[in-house]
Image (cartoon, rainbow over all chains, first blue to last red; front, side):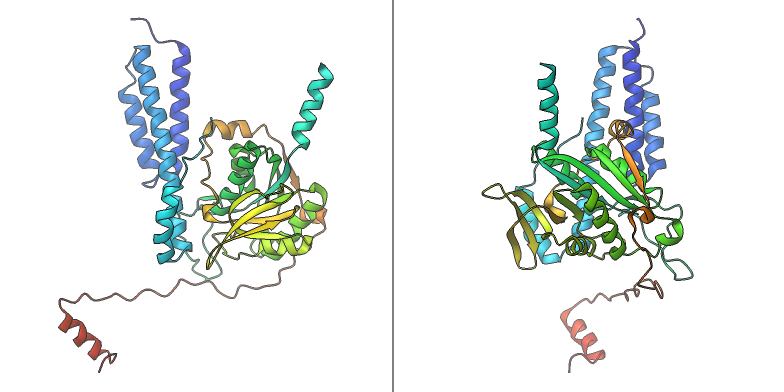
Length: 107
Length: 271
């Protein structure tokens, strides 16, 4: 089996760097995130099939989207809890959940 | 054909509002803040800092207005220490065109108040001439909720604070702003130039990913000093002490209504 094209390798490295950058805001701490990220990438480092690599990259990009959503929700909830009255929070929970739009994602 | 292209570019830049967005570098919202042992302030050394969440919402609104072609140019400004550049870089990564950093020397940083910041911003507005200034409604470290209002007063511009929606007015000559007030929502029309402060439900800010942060390094970032702007940073307030809020006394769980009434009687709250 031939080794995968070099572009895929640089894509994987870029994915790792992006995930590592996002780990700084992880609730359980950067060290926790980094250790798990490293072990997951290490576990899959033997994969040679380009299609399989693309699937794994896609999975990594999905995790990025999930982290973005997690961070946004956490921040919103924390601010709502700190700055708004409890009964206001319950009424706005019904209205804001109905008109909450999907966040625009940057490229 | 060449001249056509240049004219198109000029039009794209001159069309739409020019927005100035204020960002403040504060201790990250998720950090457990600790009071210094000498009670002079809170611990900031080695503590994670990030952009004030309400300012992120302001930045996001400016970028969205650009995407909707309501705005032509969005400029971010931050008044603070050298590390405020990182905050500005985040704003640039979210889609802001260029940034201005008004650098405050460390000695004067702790004594900086909204009155000084609003004076600095007013001076910058004189030269930048924005159509709209968007600020976060308040900073999560001092919770002053003053800078936007003071800035509007200094510039003698209309203000629309606690904005949860910004759109063109019916005749498109003004801005229609929906405000979150105690009674519910209030909708007002303001003429531009104006100052708007962002509330929590204005939008959901995008995350500044690493590729965008790297691209943002190419965007212009200008530095200014308070002396250049001719603003006096003499403090008007003195912090006497900073303390933890009183510890909540532990509550007691009761098994039955009789227990509850008994305990209330013990405390003399019920006869």
